[in-house]
Image (cartoon, rainbow, N blue to C red; front, side, top):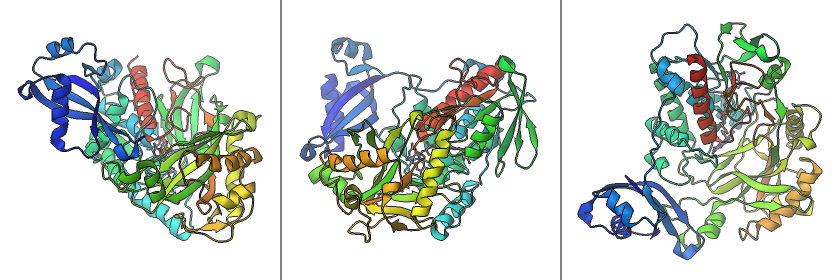
Length: 541
Ligand code: FAD
């Protein structure tokens, strides 16, 4: 199989043009092309009136060696790498092996799901513990909070089957290094579970909320069929550790019900919002350190503005879909302000998991056809901003979320402000043309006290500066809502590079976003695969 990269065609090309372009590029006759498929498709929209599609194609040709020899100077034509997934040696040895001990996976977000799936595929019958509810019941609770302001602290946007990304835009790309093509395994399993085939080849795939719900259910069925077992509404409230110093070894976990489950292998895939669990782990002596994260607001613009700016006359083209954006501004006070988790054609959602606190995030459906584009605009902060204790970042998050709750009127409405008013430092009193999507509602106010001063100063500078990157971005009546505090984990539960076990607690495998080893659905899922392999190798040893 050959991989042909950088094959460029105009946006509106006919289907047959791709084959013709491929034949021309390879310099072969039609009869010598045995078959081909699209490996990746991206676009170059720098020239808006002449947007170009860029393909990477996998092609089967009659004389591969001859073609490669003839085109050896073309760096874009190479033998296609093998991207299929192979189980680690330890896992194969253990396949079908009936052991008394089962690995425990805590959390059913993308990290826990993929750890459990790989363990189950290796025949290791994982026990999966999830504090929240099964996804359908969780959906009722989450939408109930948005409509009725009734927060269930154990069943919400952060907690429950599918994890934090279930009610999301379902963006499935990441910038992690992935030499073993684990991302491909993730996408392949997602397609098996019901994701659209196109996620395998579009450069920035997304799934949207409702499909994610169905996929999570299908993956559960697959894991159970392979011998895995799920327990919902089963919060891990304690861990049992034996030994001291280098000999510390996990012996089991205790549920909030008091039930004790003995095990020597625990995947800790608890996400970035399990603050009570972080506190418990810290008290039990598990090594934790503070790490940088970001804080800011969600901003909403008309999607049509972003489409027109990015795609010009091609706005609305079906292949391009709703346009996204990525922005960065380095402020004079040394802070970086950047866009994060941009959701084209989506809605801003209430993402709190603790009573009396307000947090925003974004989601969309697969169609991305809501009126507004939303994105977090955040400022990077580091442990120097919250010194003194490994969990101090959590205290800062809580303080900002409580402040947002109060600024929003104490009813779970999000505090909001028009962009122009925010930059000019005056409270907003009425919405303009942009109708915010956040439910239950946005309470207009002055956001100047919602974040630390350095962040407010940097953001006031950034919005007008962003207008140079996207004309019209500094829109007086674009709406800001606050606060974004859960951009990534404020801690790292550090692990050893060689065996992925906790730095000071053997058998404990910190994983995914909460442990500080992933940011986003795809990278969390990839980390789940890595950790499952490490568990299998440890069990085989
Ligand atoms: P999580 O998904 O957070 O899963 C952790 C799980 O552990 C939860 O189900 C939780 O209930 C459970 N748990 C926690 N503590 C315990 C305990 N003590 N006992 C038992 N169970 C426990 N990322 C993207 O890449 N693309 C997007 O479009 C995107 N949109 C998002 C939209 C929203 C609204 C949110 C909230 C997040 C979004 N993200 C997105 C981020 C993404 O969801 C996370 O990066 C990802 O889910 C992290 O995966 P994880 O498995 O590490 O943790």
